[in-house]
Image (cartoon, rainbow, N blue to C red; front, top):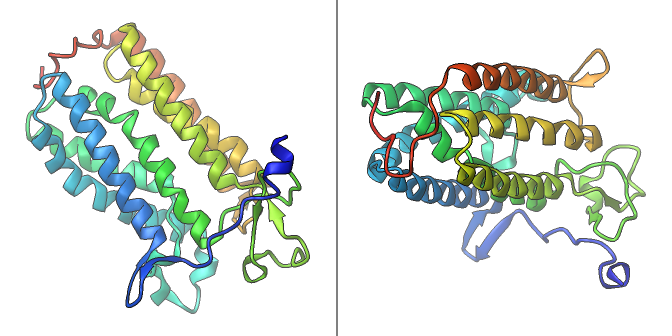
Length: 277
């Protein structure tokens, strides 16, 4: 029945949202909304653990911009050929091109440094942010839909996304519909966030393990999503760089989780864990 209801998912008519003369880039808007929602979720979770929501917001004010810088640098470094001869386009973030692995690394490092300077408990902060981050990523992926980018292989499935001719890959100009890998990743992230919240409520995890599970869960999702994507990307030994990064993240997360299982303290009750131990 669904096949008859949905022939394909149409792409938006443009990259912007608004009424002339005011137009907002949908890519940037999706990222901004995702960040606001994530900070709101993390603040509520932090408050339930006895933390100061304003302290978390202050950290986010620095961690988010640094995360965006890290995400852009990761994209430029891993896809440098695209910028050769036109290095000015490095700053054109509104056109797309943010590497989530670089953004996560830069954002987390910034947040950890600031939290330690303020005497806050780092594992608790990471755990409260764990379900919020994939929600932000899911919302941000809507920007790829508006940009008609980062889609997957050709597909005739009823939920395939219809791509305009101007955005189709070379050699596939005659193919109209493709796997909406950005939608797959968004749904995976929402499911991951729900799973993390469920695990958090069991009370069986140790401090920091919820964030470690987020890293592992996200890396696992990127493995199969990257395998479907057909956009140009540098490869190492026949695999996309992001696939290798996902393997590395999974291995590191597994090792960290094992160490946390042996040495980390049990996760604090909701009203505890805001201050440094």
